[in-house]
Amino acid sequence: MVRLKDIAEKAGVSIATVSKFLSGKGSVSPAAEERIRQAIESLGLKAENIPRRKNSLKAIGVVIPDIENPFFSSMVKSLELLLFRYGFFLLLCNTENDVSLEEHFIHYLNKSGVKGIFLVPASSTRHAQSLHSGMPIVLLDRSIRGADLPLVATNHYQGARIAVSYLLQKGRQRIAFVGGRRDVNVYEERFRGYRDELSERGFEVDPNLIVEGDFSFHGGYHAIDVLLTRTRSFDAIFAANDLVALGAIERCQEKGIRVPDEVAVVGFDDIWLSRLSHPRLTTVRQPVYELCREAMVVLLESLNRGVRPELRLLEPQLVIRESC
Image (cartoon, rainbow, N blue to C red; front, side, top):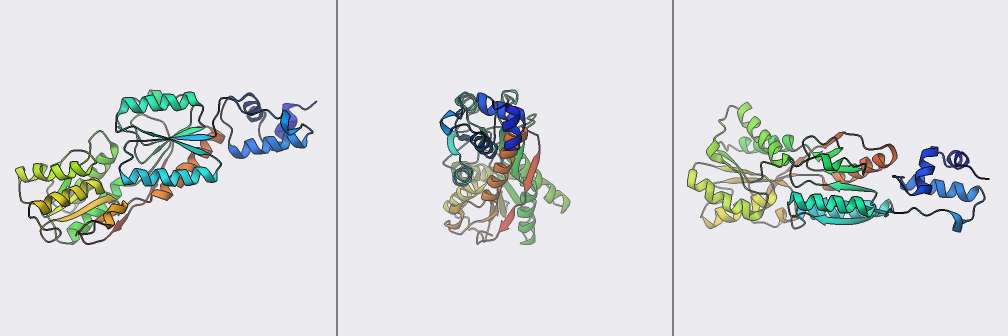
């Protein structure tokens, strides 16, 4: 008679892990699952008698706020490649920046039996309680206040400081901050970096040069109209992301404002469109593939050892093109 203890010793895992595998309840990593199967076979059981996991898909959920944003579509592409290498497939949910839809998707993914979830939250101020259901969740790019979950992100604060420092080095002194939603921590971190870099260099942070909105092309486009109703005294724009920056450039050109001669523009993300604009966009690059790879490592660790709150920050890089 083969005991759980025999299988556990042969596979090099705990008895509890073998029990989870046989019952189909709880998370078992792909590597541990394969070792258990091999151990069972080596102990004399036939392959057709090895239990199959129930109520568990060989899949990972990926929940993002806006699939039309090239930054997030690049993230999905990278995650899909990484998941495939580890024997998973991807279930994609696009929330359209709607927190209630995000809640629905997370509930659905939990019920569907996926192994875990990568989540780019629609808002950093949403209720965190619903995320603590035992399902491994790794936050990507954006945090949620009060959520004791692992987060893998770029150092948005440092990236903003790098961007503003470069504009100041180029002799720009009236730098506007354009776009983004205040309820998303990415906005908060990038604005804080913008503010601190200006302040520490002895420059005033002028409220007239700060225009909120969203993270879209149209948000950047319309932000220029708002900015121009307040003042024409600005010589640079640090945009909340590349789409905002591209929208701002479009509107500046329509208004007869020359970029970069009169107004320099820096974005954030380094999406592929930033290399096609006229002028090509100077931006802060997020290491998308590296972010996804780190998130994959964290998720696999969560499957093996349980979810542990941690923060992994990757360094941004300034990419200099013609918009400055």
